[in-house]
Length: 209
Image (cartoon, one colour):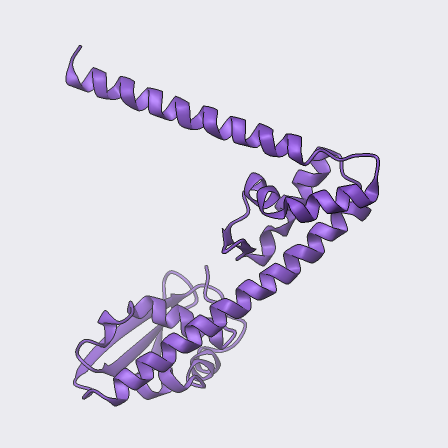
């Protein structure tokens, strides 16, 4: 048997094992979360197996908390598929919203802490490098000036922006052009696109397609 054939066989076995493992895990969760005739028991099951239900439904989690508010319907649909009544499913919605808010608060606090570190780095180092960041905007309910000025409300962003403007774009509504004046190693601390995304998040500005 040639090496390629052998490698292919090993790969197929590994993939099959992965699929079987996932199937067994799914069947286990389905068994654990089957509803009963008792509403109190059903609600207790949903509380106990909340994380498993989310994973089974394909909901993205971080530290056992949902990171996307719009994925709640996946868990609801899974529980409906399992045969739960709407009044029992309400407990899932409540837990989902509470944990999502915890996740959002944790994310916001982490970004604020990171921005404080970056601001201290900026203040303690000479600003000697210009970096241009271009962002194509596909969806915006305000004028480009209003959007960019709102970003400048952020203390860190306002400090590092040397100049900003926008141009018309053949793809999307317009393109923001940000010229940033930063210390030479500033963007070794964080990717410039990630920093922009964080600023949008803090200022409540939509940053998707």
